[in-house]
Image (cartoon, rainbow, N blue to C red):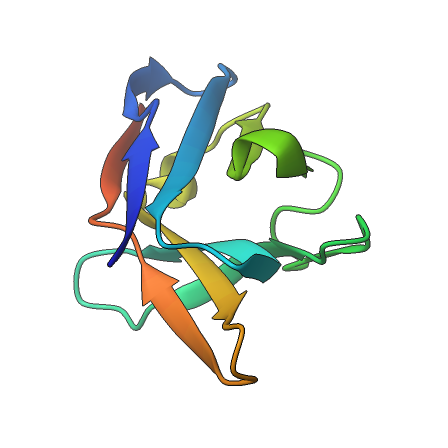
Length: 120
């Protein structure tokens, strides 16, 4: 069994910063891509940022320059540093990880989500 546990969400004023963390635990053979997604009320879940096991990153246009994704492979943890937050960044943020298994298969896992609220 694999679990992704997020932390670091909360309430912040516009222009402020937050740092999200997501730690993977359980029966882990190898973690491939990790990423952050978000879902605002009444909207579909959208990609925020992803990072490969080698450290290559990709960002949604709306968060480029303001957000930074990173990971610590030794700790099976991915981070999202969010700066210059805007009210439109308000959403539930979800961590995602794609794991490989020793027998050759792979599967994606989701965290439970953490609320980020940015007040104007």
